Structures are given as structure tokens and as C-alpha cells.
Picture 1: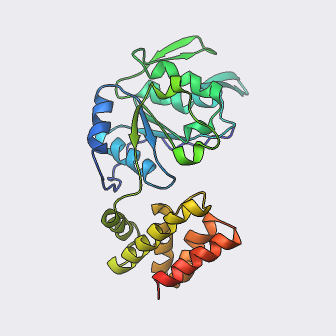
Picture 2: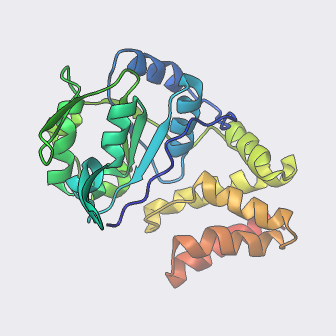
Picture 3: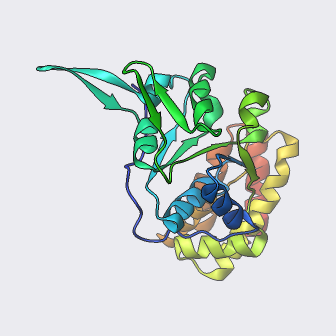
Length: 269
């Protein structure tokens, strides 16, 4: 069973999130009206942090599932386990969320198999029910349950996408990289580097993101910038930190790596 999920807990400390629009208000209304939510945006733009912040604000437990192409319906719903004294049913993360009124966050949902995604349909309309075929239980969602999915449209457009019949069951929210000053603030807050360094890192990122038109399939995320800032904070030279945390994870192409290194040299003179 290849499944990764977070613990079913309510976060006690507020996860830092800096809104750039009306996303907090929109999500709050979706939760109040039992509407499922689809978060769309590039890798590392803050989708996971946003949902962590909203779970804290709404005082709901959060269960996160990292989707992949081997994810089965049983991985989400549950299965019988064989023990020395017989068999016992174990709820999967989706069933646990439905039963306890938690927020269930399916990260990169299009990576899951289509037959797995279909099991979500009865939870995303007025029924708010989860049929558990193996036990015969028809489970009604507890108050507070909300289904949230995310994916990267730019990356998935070339590979997979959600069917229209699935997409129309969600309220879609478009998230993107933060405005310049906001991203600087996030890097300062998350890494502890000084303002000038955070400013330079965001300047570098904006230059690197323009390389997407020149063959770079993934652009540097805020997450990578924070990693570079943490390396620098720990004593690594800034150019080396940028290479290890930003350039090398993004590409092995000699031309692109050279172009990114040139931009680093131009940013940190």
C-alpha cells in the first residue's frame, strides 16, 4: 500500500500564510456551504500551506493524501486487515475524514487512477455520502467534512486532466506565485534571512521563471527559494545555495543550467 497521509489532528499553531486575493473568504464560504474545492496552481506556490492555514482557521482536523498512479479506491476508503484473531476493518483516510468531519486534502489528485477519482463523486454533491461496498455501510459525512483537491494545470495539461464531469463538482480557486513584495515577506519569515537577500532571491526567481518559454518545464517555486535562503542562513555561499537548491532540482539540461547560472551570477555580483 503506497499511501502517504498526515495525522488526523488540529494544528495548534497558526501556519503562516499571506493572502494575495480573496482566497481566504472564498474558501470560508465554501466550507460553510459544504462545497468541495479545487486548488489550481504551479508546484510550490503555497497550495498546501493555504489548506493548512484554512484548517487551522476553521478549527478542523486535516488529513492530507499525496496522490499517485497506484492509489486505489481501497487506499482511500479502507480495507480488511488479517490479524491473528481474524479480520478487522480499517478505515482509509477519506473514510476517516468523512466519519470525523475533517478536511480531506487530495494533493495532485489527477495522479490517481480514474476509477479512484469516481468514488469522490457522491461526496461532492447534495448527498455527501460515501458508500463502502466492502462493509455495506452508507456513510453520511459528519458536519465539518470538506473535500479539497489540488493539481498543477500547466504540468498536467500535457499528461492528464480531470474529466469535465468531475471538475464541475468543485469550486475552483486559482493560486499562483505571490506578488513580489509578498514573496519577499514569506522568504524572510520562513527562513530568517535579511530583507536584501530575500529581495534578491525573488528577483532571481522572476528572471528564472521567464525561462519557461525556453524549455524549462518547471519554474522555481517559493519553496525552492526558501530552501536556498536556509542554506545561505546556515553558512553556504549564496551562489552555491542557489545552484543546489534552485538550479540543480529544476533541470539537468546543460544549456538551461548554464542560462540559470548566468542569471545567478548577474543577480549576486
